Length: 192
Ligand code: ATP
Image 1 (cartoon, helix red, strand yellow):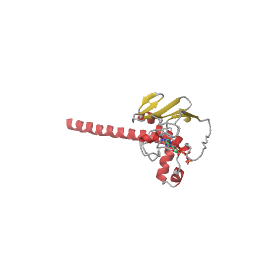
Image 2 (cartoon, rainbow, N blue to C red):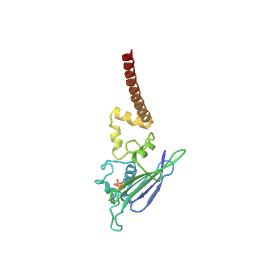
Image 3 (cartoon, protein in one colour):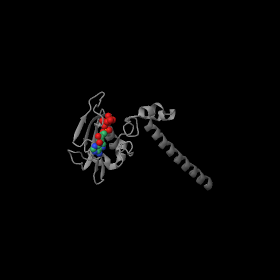
Image 4 (spheres, rainbow, N blue to C red):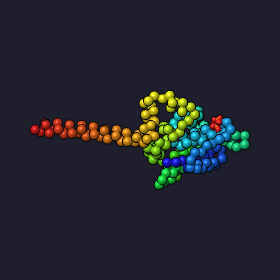
């Protein structure tokens, strides 16, 4: 799964509609300090439902909406769309927040729940809590993380996480069935 393009309008310093297309390979974004490079990463986190204001480098939820400048009035909403592509499909995910606080997520152009978006990307390693976004200072954190923390990271990268979740569900089902069996054998014993 690859991020092919991004569209930002009214998000942080991106007052004007801005499209970024990412070619195959590595893309490097350069620019002056305070030019908005990190805001692009914040936008990706935001679309995937980042809850931490610290991670978004904001105080209030509404801080992601362009606050206005000497030449432009404040925006009425922030909108970010991400377009991903894999071998067989193109997926668009987007989020909009209006100045009056209405928040909407979109999956392929249709309003959706954040849960739907997370499910769609399950096992791809894409999302806020995974390794796909490595922020400033995080490399240092990874280097100094415990073996247990590193294992979680590697398992996610290797897609094992999904199977662990399924195994957990299967074991819970098994336990339920075993309890039912016990109950049935109690009833049989009573009848005997
Ligand atoms: P550096 O190289 O120093 O890390 P950067 O290119 O990563 O900088 P960002 O941190 O992405 O820059 O952008 C910071 C800029 O975004 C600041 O000028 C800040 O005023 C602006 N900004 C952040 N939120 C808003 C907002 N809601 N409205 C308008 N501008 C905003």
